[in-house]
Image 1: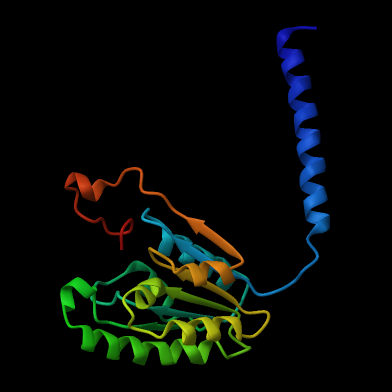
Image 2: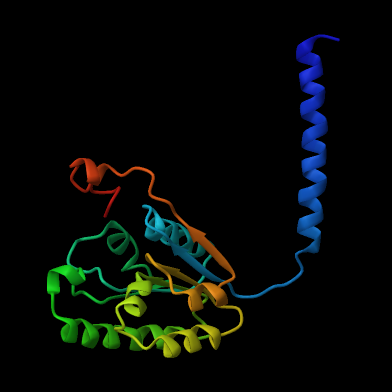
Length: 202
């Protein structure tokens, strides 16, 4: 038997073992429920991942809601794409970044107004997916009451999926989440003096 044939046989046996393992895990997964997904960390791609899930959900015909905290002053591609989609309800805090406003009281008032829309969506059984983009900052900065937010997330309809994005997710949020992904920041063009790029960064 040649080395190539031996390699092919080893590969086949490894893939057979992998398939058995994965098939077993699939068979064990019997719970059907709405998921709370938290995308956090300093790396790029948290909102991009969330909107990827939104696109997937819309593709399946699910009714969705999007609440964007922090952002709003830039013309973001995801808002352009989804804001007129009949399956997507889109709300933006529209104050821009907190380091631009430099007005805590104004930011708190805007966050509270925006949260009312989020709370409504989180109590609506017809809304199957809710994206809470940059919500973590609202808790970190104390713009929203943490216990209020956590209670709304925990008491939402049982089959509703929620995706929360933003850096420095609170430990209490991580504890109640079903899936948590922390994106690392190994390298970023911005820190090398490269401007943010349309379609990649916004």
